[in-house]
Length: 406
Image (tube, rainbow, N blue to C red; front, side):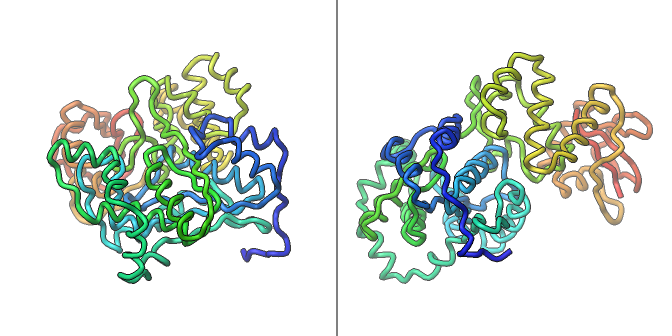
């Protein structure tokens, strides 16, 4: 749908609505300060705010989803919002929170990841609204055009001391580990995104604060413009501190089917219920308090339903909920399963890894040793790691995954 500049969404300056966005519990801090940012939102000025993601994996998870949902909240207030794909910076490798150097990705790998992400975020933020659609941009469209002279000019704005101050660099220096020059360039490139788009604000995870502040510095020096940095929480487990991570493969991922996602949310520990309700739903705070008083199993089902309602649809959420109840509470076999298509006489191990049901052959071998793979036609455990299935066979993998070979 084409954007119509003559029908721009009205800016909402209602203090209650703004406080709901700023005070829900997703935002962990606003730099230089929250008061001035709130005044800007209430001024009636249409601001430009963005969040950037490096497409370093083929899927996003719920902690990413909550950031995109927050961006959508700002769009609904009438502001211009941008979802920035770091197609260029993804190939450099972000050193944030890394004790070692990231693997440099190929252009083809990054483009493949972006294609998957576009499918996963389509229901989280409105790109088709007639009066104020969210925008997608790619930082390769300006970073790839920088000349050596441009890069040297950028580098002249920042000192080596500023770069070395980064905590992860300090840690590497103490441990005698390498810091490569291209890693110094990363925050410079990400910071230039703010200059290229001339934004008023940037949203980022707390682990990206250094990079976002780099953009604030460059924007002020190159455009004489100030930028707010809105940091959001990383949705960690309140007991263990564990984070959802695409690089570590932990969390609830957006490339899952509705059935798989419902099960993955139900598998989350009880202490994550409130975290998920606050971050990944738009249920009111009062309603969340009521949910937290009920049985954890029922609270989790409500949580999973509300999340799937946003990511997929209410119909798919209800269907997944009923499937969970029938399959896991009533111990029935689900009517619908994940279909894996294959050709020739392939081993079940290879089919599951290629179909991304399992992360590795090692995981398959572990599940076989634990008697965690069941042939649903015979109700017998798979004990041979080299087992070759026939078309039409159905299997239960672990506790919550069901697949059919085609």
